[in-house]
Length: 244
Length: 244
DNA sequence: AAAATAGTGTCTATCAGACACTATATA
DNA sequence: TATATAGTGTCTGATAGACACTATTTT
Image (cartoon, rainbow over all chains, first blue to last red; front, side, top):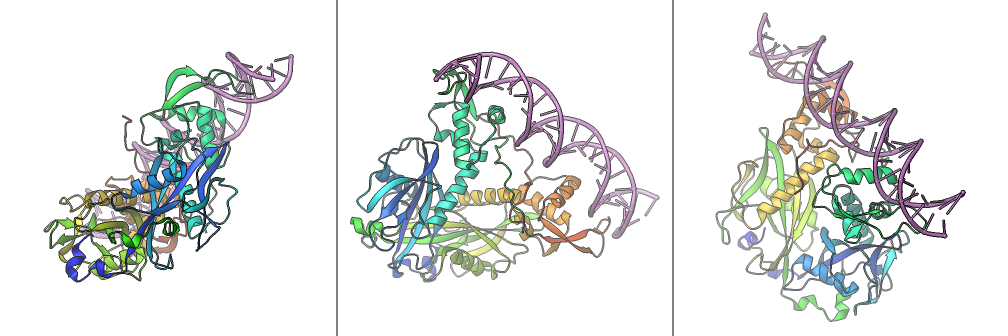
């Protein structure tokens, strides 16, 4: 682990320096579509290419703090942002100048504001997941893992409630699932299913002010329940992954 | 990310050096019980305490290579060992002497041999999961996460087949599930369930040489199928996690 | 009035698990 | 012969999904 190697003749201070960075896959929903936060690189390598926001960790901060800071630097906010670790990458030669180990993080939150380009990037923007350019470095892979993690976590955690406002309708919650999963869901069955999972949502006794823009009754408002895990889970529609 | 910070006045080479280590949660089944590989620390801090095996990454190796090397140094082998990344930890002050970021890995394999103490540890041994001492550093937490990951992956991947020999009986496979999950399973239902999952196992046309030591017919032998994901999954017996 | 939506009722196919049973092996 | 195990048959309760229906709201 930490220091036993000191005793075995391994002195890491004699090694080439290792730098540790964090990369953030930040997801939000805008105008009914899933978006990821990207920055346009201003310098080589990969100048002009889009990449995930990220940067070096600082001496006094833990890894999640560094991820939150990087996200805040681009979006100017932190409240109600869920952050969790994805994976780490450390292949030699990943960066031509020095050894870099990168820890990736997944973040999501509702209604994130427009980004402002940091001093280190030419531009920053929310980009639709379904209309992405090829990303710099191995960021396509990292983004893919982040997306899959988010989609999987919708199944067995109440994560979707972090994508909506504090009180929400079942239809709004269904919209989150449909947007992240990219598939339409059956309104009636989804409704009954959500209410049948203990602790997923709890009623507020209130309803929306009016019906939908195109008609329909007022919808009851709910808030997130206290469940950490959904039992039973809301499984994605069968993905035909034929073996072989 | 990787290098955009270079342009923003952040030179990581001006920072205190960061060292990167790997820690390995290595699991195997011996005598019907789940075991984890531990090393006894020979020096401060935590001298005399047991810890997960691990050490510093070397300049020319990727992270998974480092984990495999650390495991091989303690067990003297590598064949048929499944290794996957768990998580990374980088809290400042985690080690009193310098900044250390640790990447943890999960490994499992069948019939791993007795360990030999590396030069950096006082002792090394397979220890039963249900009879563990308190571990050094934050290794209790890392081990816990590794166990949960292993238990979860048995549900939806054919991971259990990496715990048994190349050909195996359904009863042997059931033993893996019972050992890792720590619960008895219904023999008949498990049997039918395994055979109903496409690509989980495939028959060899052969059977065991004789029956069980206490009687019974010869069992058919199977080998691992080509499925990467189990559909439908083999879910653990309901864990009553009352919301609260 | 027409159209859209919230929410509920009901039916069916599937699956997990309980239980029972047979066939075959060992001691 | 007694006992344990491999493997199969069958029943029940829970659940996902299809479909239908009522009630409420907007245009």
